[in-house]
Length: 551
Image 1 (cartoon, one colour):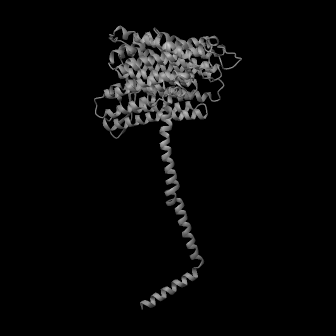
Image 2: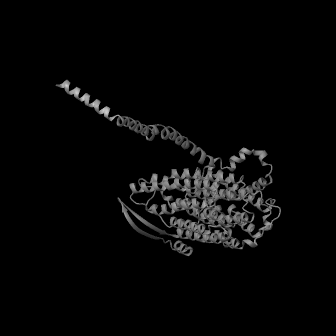
């Protein structure tokens, strides 16, 4: 698949297959398979990373009672993503899109407990907003243009304004941009192999991939709005990760930050750059989650980084892989992430004239380095606080180490390879020296801030206050806004309807009132049946008297 993508890229070819299923009113319902260099290479990445994660899961999920169910769900997840990647038809995309949402719910609630159930419901309902948006897009395209193939239309087509709005809504729900960001850290209730697959190349990247594919449909107003949403998502996620203690949530917030980076550069016209960073991010984020899972697995399912210390002595290979993936995440020169992030930063510096976008973007890059260094300090050089006696060793992790070994070389070398292959026409970027070195400067600033935050790990609450820390680490109270603030009004309305209508008027004029009326009627009829001779005699006498009065 990867070689086919290189072949399509080199010769600028694409393969379009369309199978007609049936006609609906004036629209043809088709199954479309569109294979070009982008879909082939992305699909090859999905398959390669998922194969390594399956091998990794063999040891991570060892002894699980429902391992076959887990493998079946993961396979459905990968196939749904492949269906979504290989189609440019909204109906076909919806099948894969819905499959991702439903299977992700089943995987998040894989561990049966209340926390997993709540996280799964938040994940499923947030993604259902995007599913409904795609359904609205299908309806609008059917009524306005009579076709569901996205590749045949642009933003100039009549009726595509609302379609592009709903596509953006679907993408930001799946990629967890503001205001739908709360489900992404909550989905960390799933097993770590699921998190590795979800955050690298499947669920959360589906929204970015849809935006890349349909970027020609969006007007400048929508792109400007999406630019600010993605930038503030990037800033919020980076700031929250610096105050988070859960290892998996820190990596989830870093995913959220990188998704904001991809969408922001996409809004400025760099769709190829966004796809470039999507691929490099898939590599180092899968490796980062694998390393986190190996550490959690060895520490007896402990996820608090305050208990993880000195792991560089116990798990040297895992810590080496984690350092490499962290360096790629920070954009350290000559790692895979550097070739995409540095080019994105220079492209944004040349494309943007507003100081707000420039300032927020580079502050977010510094925050990325900051939480990465903080995480490394706590895990590698902190104090080991889990238990007194321990037998940590990598001898029991050989299968997991093989999975990580299959990614580490790509994390180091694949960025330069992609920069040679994908970017056929190099970007002409002319910047002053101060803006040219801004990325490296922010990396150094983030390095300093991360080391200082680590030193203040026992004292910084005195400086910023507990409430402010909870506000920042809680993603600016976004989980509360996404759950309680939305649920409470509907629960109040439901309680009112239940009390006043179900147990009130409808009960009085419905079941209870009808029952009382029938009981009253039957009791009266029973009186008549007990005294039927007297009643008949009285009726007869009234009838005789009536006849005498007439005649």
